[in-house]
Length: 590
Image (cartoon, rainbow, N blue to C red; front, top):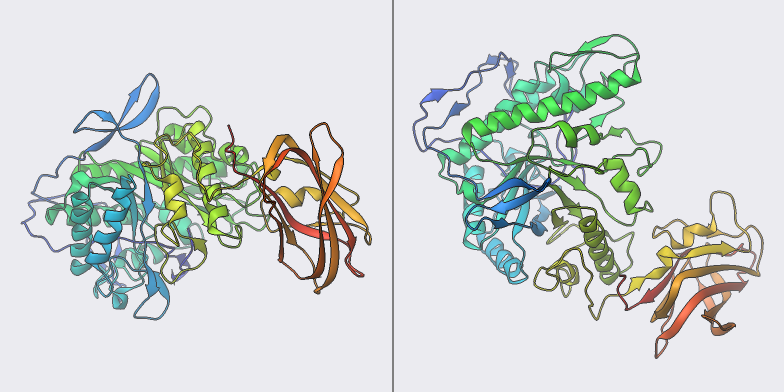
């Protein structure tokens, strides 16, 4: 989700989240795996060492959650009951100050781990019916912060002990765990080894995914993590899946994608022409599949029944999501149809102004039936939603929409935030976000439910017109669910109106002011009941400023409203503007 930057040489390293792994064998390993021909660079020097990963002699327990295909549709199921398993849960993080200073996700850090807090949170989650949590590796900083790597750049034994303890506590609470990796650890020998291989052909994370010499190092990292779990007798049956990269993406501004000529041979043995956009796309698609499938096979040599997945940012094409300056390249359509991974983890947050349907088109999920899809991150950013109740409404709506699109599991970002304040957290306040997605309250993830604190914004589906508008600030900005604003192209009086898709009983109307500098303004609020005339119901007259919210809350709902008009009669010498107009109802969508 959020990036926590670390870089070695020209290689990008850590992003956000948590979990960990290390190796201190509790049983004597017996058989060495076929070691790839790689050069490993230690953290402290460029000394060449051999891979050390070995296959544990202790047989791995079987994982309870598996995938099957019934009537052409993939689904999760619990091997203990043979019933369908629908993952519904939380990303689990603790964003607290680290030893080195920055705020990191430090659930399992040896300097921060609090088993009693984990137990208390798990107890509350289970009381709401949640059955999964997602926790990540490598996001708690570096060795001095008690993170995943030790002083030698390899896995930290104490950290791995915490991972196993966490898994045991999850099992005691009947929760399954997605163990997700953010990146190669920032101070690890694996990151230094891959960074040493960057050159004019392979750079940044592209190097880790495509370089024939770097991919085996990535494989060795995951072998080390999984073997460490097996050797410690970790309850692997509680691991829902291993996530190879929590938000996978390539970088368009680094080689080989930045090249405009030349031939590149990647880890899969194929050669691609960098003067051809089609070849570049094939290189990314086929290279990603090779990288993921190679690591999956290596994991299953150690842990034969493990499920493996990859997480993805929202792709930026064909419908732009992140703007023209986005350099992260995400391509998923080919992957969803050709990879051996067991399921896919796709991430989307409402509130960015892009319709859900456009997001699903970007991911290319149409016709993907046999591979289960999980919405592994969704939530509500504070700068997109003015209250936790508004965020809760969006979170429930996205779960319903994605369920109707065929998704098979959901995890909210995130259960708790501690010192991080960028999103509304699920357990924050009265826990309203957790309540609206809790299986105990909404057994069917494809259906809405009524909550006394939830209001649905029907403005989002309304048709907007205005008396005038500036190019680049159209009237449609007032109902797009984003901080963008409409601006009239002349002084007051000016108006903007919303025609509702259906007559609706409105409980509240909220106007978010776009005005700088502050000053006196006068705005009239008019509504029309279906079949009747417009009538004035409120006049706002007073000093207003940027991002103020003007709220009209009638004592009783306004019944059967099909049109709302806002007339700005005075805003001094400014042209009238609004960030957002929200038309709220207690009635859930169909």
